[in-house]
Length: 463
Ligand code: FAD
Ligand code: NAI
Image 1 (cartoon, rainbow, N blue to C red):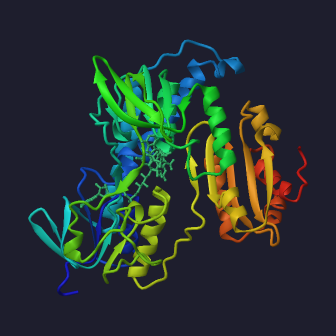
Image 2 (cartoon, rainbow, N blue to C red):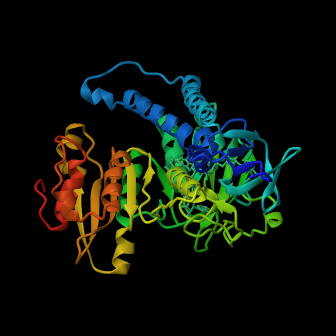
Image 3 (tube, rainbow, N blue to C red):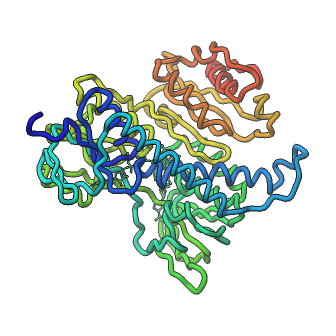
């Protein structure tokens, strides 16, 4: 240790990095975390998960109140939008949580090194005018927005996800480029608050990577809510014109170009790993053809002593995946066995209704072997029906021979919370029968999960 300033130096204080730092310190390692942002918490807490969920929650309340959903239950009144106050609520959520990480760093004696880190060698990093040596270095630098050639983000009228969280007025017509998770979540926020929203998606269907049936159902529900789509269409440019933007689109498979007039444009075509300016060459590291740093199952890179986790390595770009890798990498550095089961990482889209899945999609499972699928519609679930939340379904995909659950997909108002049960069941190697014979409280949306599991054997009760 004599030569080293720290046992562990973590670059980046997002959900991957800050969690790794706390766990490393808990395990008795002398730990520092470098962060170039003013506040801790990374993309997730500052400009990602948390502020988007604050606006999703607030805009949902507004839609319920102002657009008549509450009136169905006899609750009426005059409801007005105070957007500044809504933004203040978002900032308060971000401020509270980022300060919370600062508190946890102090409590666990993690040193926060403020500034941009650049490798000087495989075990030393420069931060401002200071060079720090560490026995282990964890790269947790996360990701940023993928730019779209021909569409220049000005964060006023042409925004990325960060700008879309801060719009000072409700757009008249928001054109969303990319029908993925960000497009649909932030598109939902502004649609609920009064914007016309058109989603332009390159592929033939929204939400790539998810179960086909779920994608189709989501498309149908969002259309009913007022979303407009241009599927199988790519954006080739966006030009400011007076007060608006002219967006040029053309069929993805070729054909005549056309234009869409928008007041605002959201670019949400994906994210790319942050490795620029990190000096990876000085550490002897390279990136793969997707710009990611490759690791083995223990999160070791090709250079001994350097580890990597989170959005900067392959796998889904999700906060909980980064967090679990943060815990595992710290445990591996401490000589324990840190494992992440990448086959069981849930994903959630926080729209209304919510969309969630874990494990294989039906298409993936069928490609691997014979399966049985049980499906249960929310319309037949007593609680969802009572609450007037009939949209969506739950589907359980099981191995036809062993009955082991291979995947669970759902679209319903509480899917984001309910998917945890599916993930836990799969982590424990559950069969559909195990779920079908687990007592679920009545009346809950979760009973639909039990019924979907019963449906795998063709024996649900309520349909
Ligand atoms: P990041 O959170 O990106 O953190 C990396 C940190 O490293 C950053 O703070 C950066 O400033 C710092 N850094 C980078 N380079 C350096 C350097 N050289 N020196 C010092 N510091 C550096 N995921 C979910 O699971 N659920 C959600 O609901 C969700 N919502 C999202 C909504 C939006 C709008 C966005 C954009 C993302 C969302 N995500 C969500 C994705 C989630 O934010 C990321 O998967 C997660 O933050 C990745 O964590 P990370 O620790 O790998 O990196
Ligand atoms: P995404 O990968 O989810 O979706 C991008 C979409 O843009 C794809 O459907 C793609 O086909 C489309 N696209 C690409 N180029 C296009 C073009 N030129 N014209 C039209 N469409 C085009 O990426 P997104 O939504 O930007 O999100 C980035 C990441 O952030 C995701 O990987 C996700 O994991 C994470 N995230 C997670 C959330 C959650 O867990 N709830 C919420 C928000 C983000």
